[in-house]
Length: 578
Image 1 (cartoon, rainbow, N blue to C red):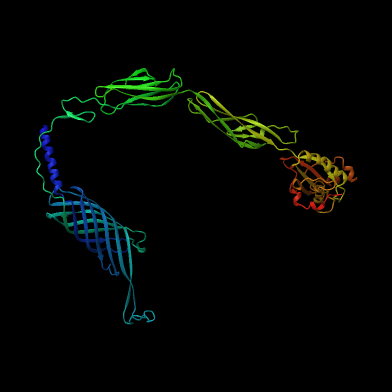
Image 2 (spheres, rainbow, N blue to C red):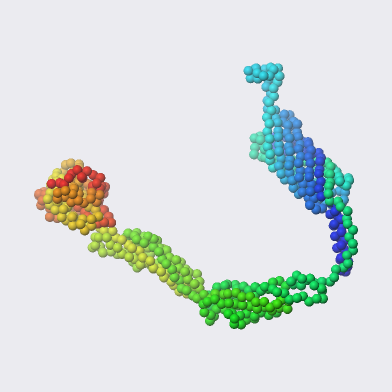
């Protein structure tokens, strides 16, 4: 049976070799081409004739490569005075069927481009055209004009043909038919369509070269000796014993790092062809297991690095060992840091909170939560609205609020803290009003005592504080700017810097003059009411300048509007009022 198989195989091989030797290496085709063009739309189908050539290279008996170059021409398109020439340059694979030595059908698909050039008659000038228009031509000669255009676009063919062998180096091709696709522009008449589905027919002669060589005589070889291949690739006599191999043993742990209480499988791997008869496992030199696989456990093992080794023995390889390391990690509860942004806010403002925690061997750490020693927390934002301050203290107050972040893993909860400083701005301080006689803007001595003595004490304690002066008039007083003038005179007393006047910087003095509108601010006469004479209480209350001192960082009284700096007004020109 084996001899029959060998004879059949040799016969098939010889036939294949002979067939391959009969295939020419290449060929050159020259022939006639006819193309039926189908532009589509209103342009009618038309025919074009010409010639072309091909270069064929045969990779083997059924597969080849073809380069196709050809040109066709049409002299006149249905009376449109249009002549066109089309040149194709395409290439691609060819599949031949060589069941017969004489008749060889083939199929092919070629891709490339097409170059088109056209010339069209666009008009005729009449014989009567004035000589001024065509001065160089005789008046009795009709004149025509032509428009030339050309373009290069994508083209492909798909089809087949039949070659008939007529000699050792020649084949006749009676027919070849291809679907011929071109993507030439059809012009504005046919819209955006630029596909032409054409038909190409060709016929001609192919000249062959190469590939035909005489079949050499093959002497009958004696049967080969009986051998076998050993696992290491060496070939020895079939009755010989293969030598043992030197192999590489692999060892891999599913996880190189494990937590206390966990386990990880460890596997030994041998190369193909190696069969082990025994395995011996050890941990830090201490024997622990037999077999190709081993489960490393962490029970009763302290955190640290352990060396896991394995030795394998087999009949077809020499003993071999390999090792890997596994790290046992101890549990670490979540620890981290917390941040508040911004870390300093005004009372009533909010601050965004973030925290980052790390742990080990406790599983996934949950998102942090936040608590505040005072105020409130909504999600990850601290709200200082509820922070309490001393209401009797008009100066600026500061309070540090502790923010605690908490995050939990599967075993415990970790904490981290940060702080937010909450600042309550200083409140404006009300001094007694400076009072004026009716229709007067002069600051009397009682008013000066308020400005030069009582106000001075606040300015000395807080030199960068702000003085606010608000001028008023009663409804029965005359003068549209009387309220403004009263406030400016009071400002001159504390800014002139000469005589008895103070030297408060004008930039720290704000002036407002709402006039008869008292802005809801009550009367604060102090000890000066008698200094402006007697009169109805409502008019005395209205003829005044409110005096406020705002500590550094504090806000202006809510009743004050449209205030201007004294440095922006003509206070300097008033000097020190007498």
